[in-house]
Length: 326
Image 1 (cartoon, rainbow, N blue to C red):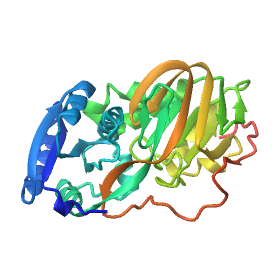
Image 2 (cartoon, rainbow, N blue to C red):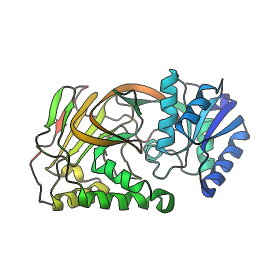
Image 3 (cartoon, rainbow, N blue to C red):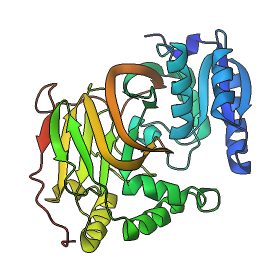
Image 4 (cartoon, helix red, strand yellow):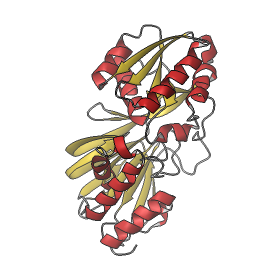
């Protein structure tokens, strides 16, 4: 692999709607990058803008200034163009920065710029769905997606606190969804009972630090799956509290699995892909592409580590119904 110190032409993609604090961070990062590279900056206001910028970048390497959603849009553009072999850099400026945290990237813009210049490309897994959408960090449906919908209007004013308020609102009112889930052709839940949440993780956390799939590894060729059946009022509360601490996997009403293909089908549901809420749909299929894209990092905190089992889906949890236990 070639260090980025040899790359002299960069395309920095920013959010045109960024606030003053983010603009200052972008300026600091760009100043650091320009000490050793020819940098062009493009401010985008829509996914279409981003796709055009990526398509016309020439020989410039893309650097994303933003969060998981911004990385998602750029990777989607590279996926559409067939250019996923091209590595990208990341200056984390998002609300949650879950992917950056999983990668061990610095959140300081100048330090992140130095990683872009001196780091090396790392191959990371990618999820691609049956509508040709991509997932770089995590996708989840159920209460988490509804929480994101509730938080969307609050994020500009409240930042990460919006996730908490959205989660409280959705958690208090969500009745659950009748959705069947299969992993590599094996039934995890059959759709006859309601589920509170279905989460598929490449990275470990969502929503600014909630460790939805705390044992996920970004480059092991498998997606980690969590299904919560905690639909009772007290059970919802207990699941939410444990989720923030990362101890929700110990609950008897939580199922886990790992595999290469996940199918969710049943009642219409919204799903949250790297912070973008899509749907409603009645069926979606996600398939992993091992080492499907490349990102510049100095190290990977969430890199491959010894794991039990093989490449087949691995299931855990007995799924006991605990509707009224906190």
